[in-house]
Length: 473
Ligand code: 6PG
Image 1 (cartoon, rainbow, N blue to C red):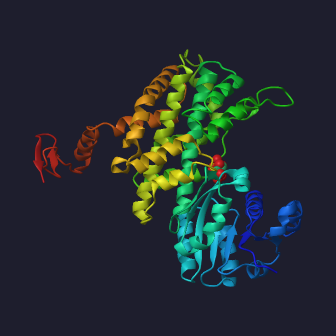
Image 2: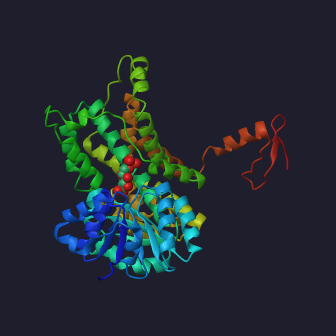
Image 3: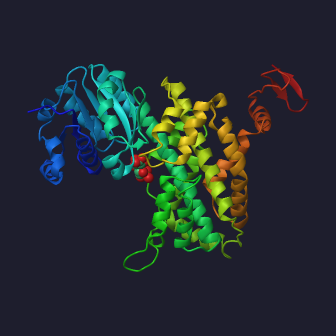
């Protein structure tokens, strides 16, 4: 029997969709799964694509059915299951073979696994896969981290199944070991920020202007073309326009306001802090999800802390709100790319921000026209590697920050929360302040802890006697 090009272990929702995508694009697959009874059912349901999909019940058979060098893709829950599967599979493989983890793994785990397998001559690839089930089936965006050798084998298959932006396949070998999973983590952080800011605009219109869901949905529908064109704006327009079959009410109004999260947004913030970076717009989104789960506390606080209800709101026009969302989105992306740059330096990855923006233009959850602008902005040259300093983004921010400022101002005046938009604006305003206020922080530190400071005239570090104003070295 002809050997398959790739092995895929784990035929849950994402694994099935990827297996069918491979098969549809002419790549032969051999699949395995922990629950054996699902294998035959899956192959039966694959219809004509089953021609290129073979099921195996034993890992030994999966390995035996693969072309050499072998590539086995795991689509299984991240964490311990990945270590357990590696322990079972690695002894069956030979030097030069590759294991790919396509889950949302913590990149530290990926680095550890990569080192451990390299010692056995095996390649370990951490691959971020974005786009949900639909993306996996018809074209995901994929962020690949691993060795050059493993990429050489996997690349032709990956390019076949990837989402296409025009003819450009949205998959790239972004760097070694944990780079792919790190890039995916930051993608998700940006995803959280974008979703959070969209929800803030929705909240202003719902609670400040009293708009019904369908009307807000129509506005987001208008925004699906033009500067805000993106998958998440399309999703928002769609969900706001949907009514509950049973009650006829807007479906979104029947959903409890308690957001779930699997952790990648939180990881982005944690890693940003480890790297000495600010991810304030992303942090605001993670925190808002955290607070959302404290429904009981919010219910009590609503009575106690807002006895008269919210202040009357003067919500800005739709154009101003659109500007606010675009500015917030640019700034959240800028924070994400700063984290990527810092990690690239820390781990020696040589990440290329333009390449990353390129592969986020189609297939993934944050795909948007803005990412094409961002790719162009990085290629045209961003001073100091700062997206916000690129000429294109300078213009975009000059056009939209007034809207962000007006929107945050109106929300603050009305007592309506816009933590993500406000964080983005606060970061932007801090960034463009040549003379900040940290001189006072340094003075305070020196006063109570003799921590010393540098003087603006070039002296220091020195400690001041805060009674006499005298300096000691
Ligand atoms: C993607 C998504 C996906 C993520 C979900 C849910 O790129 O396809 O980021 O990987 O799992 O969006 O994430 P949360 O449960 O953390 O919201």
